[in-house]
Length: 191
Image (cartoon, rainbow, N blue to C red; front, side, top):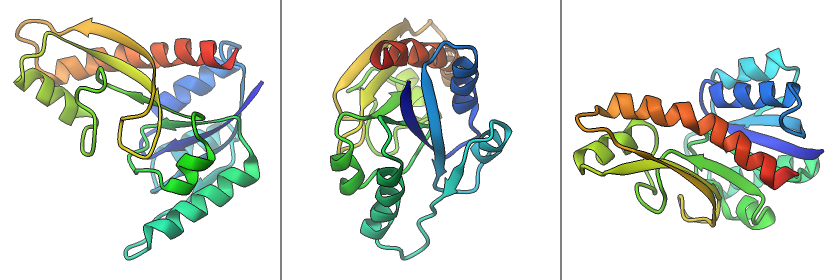
């Protein structure tokens, strides 16, 4: 059983899906804690599943190295096998990245390296894909390194962009495949 810490910034739908899969025996993990960088819905998920949570908020004017140090201290003390970023929008600092090289896993809603980088998340990605008339998109599971969305690719799943499709529709289709694809990929990594 792999020990896992989850980093999240949103409502927690992917986190909850992952926890349900774990409960059903589809994923052999023990979630040690959920760390958030803001007061958000995933804290309710942590509470519902009796998982310890930590709110580590970088306050205005806080040095990024101090925030990196606080997160690293928490993670280091837990000594997880892996860290999963599920909708975590903040860039991780060098202490965390170097301390957990090839142990931080992220799911990104495009076929990296296309449509990755700072500001490329959620609907921003899908709007650009539609505007650029891309024939395909998908999901990329990758390791996090010191640069946004540039870590080693673990797995990708491709879908076609449908003629006349809106960014909103495309985003929903990508979300539909992303959770299952993440679980499928994690099963291969963790087993």
